[in-house]
Amino acid sequence: MSSFRVAHLAHLIRRFLFTLSRRAPDQAEIDWVKGYLSPREYALWCKMPASDQCHCVLVAQTVAAEFEKDETVVVAGLLHDIGKTAIRSGVFTRVFAALLGPFLSRETTLKKFKPIRMFENLRLYLSYPRLGSELLVDAGSAEFVIKWAQEHHLKPDEWTVDTAKALALRRADELAV
Image (tube, rainbow, N blue to C red; front, side, top):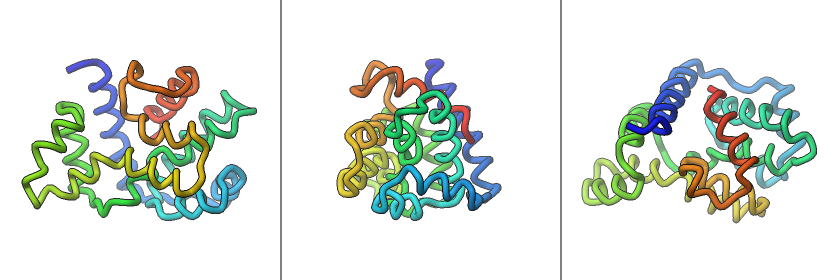
C-alpha cells in the first residue's frame, strides 16, 4: 500500500474517532465561519453534521494562518466535505468507505458495487466529492472552492488547482480531526 494511502487511512481513523465525540462548533467558531461564507454557502455548511463542521473549521483555521489574505483557500477548507450532506450516511457507511477507499480506486469501487442495491449509500458516499462540487456550483462558490471539493481526495499529480494551496489544504485536512 502506498504511503499516500496509509496516511489517508490513518486520517480517516482519527476522523472516525473524532466523529464519536459529537462536539459541535462553539458560537465563536460559528461567527468566524459566517465571516467567510456567503449566505448560500453558509446554508450548505449548516447542513453538515457537527463533527464535520468542527473538522472543516479546524482545516480552515489552519490554512487561514498560512494564507491570511486569501479567503478563497479558507472557504475551500470550510466546504471541502460538503458533498457528504447529499448522502444519508451513517457510521456503518463511513467506516466501510474508509476501509475500502485506500485499497480500491473510487472508479473501481463504484463499478463493482453498482449492481448491488444494498451498497447504494456506499456508492453515493464514495462520490461525495463530485456531489459537493455540484452543490458549490449551485451556491455560486469560487472556482477554486468548487474544484478543491471535487479534487481533495485525488493524488497531488491529479490536481488541477494551485499546488501550494492544495498542499496546505491537504496537510490541514490530515492534521485536523
